[in-house]
Image (cartoon, rainbow, N blue to C red; front, side, top):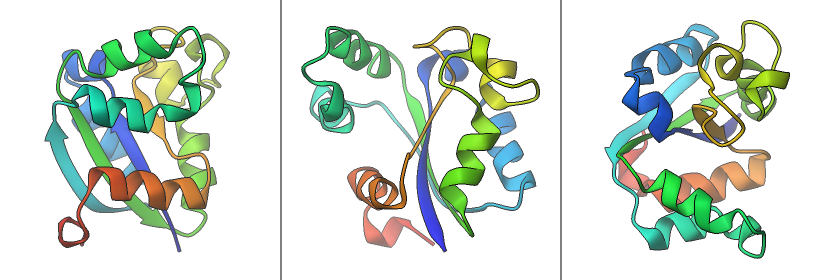
Length: 137
């Protein structure tokens, strides 16, 4: 049983898509085990995007993800990482397959509606960054 963090990013929040995105993941048989709405501060945003710290777009990522409240969700299921990433589609919505979340709701490579963990190990780390143990069910 794998776990993944899913973030519903500012562009999707501004267009009131959180329910639709969560519904698509639950409709695919993934179990929602944690959910919260929060306004990220620079510290947590920097920690979340630490892998990109030396890249020229790091500052833009942090500014974007902290610009409005987001939804953080934890999902669980067999092969959850691969299943969620397939449902979301390519990071660049213009390259995502038809019917994926990013193709349907993403605007561009940065404003692509969602984030999902890329490995089981990162899923556990990312969930721990956003949720206390007693916030997971």
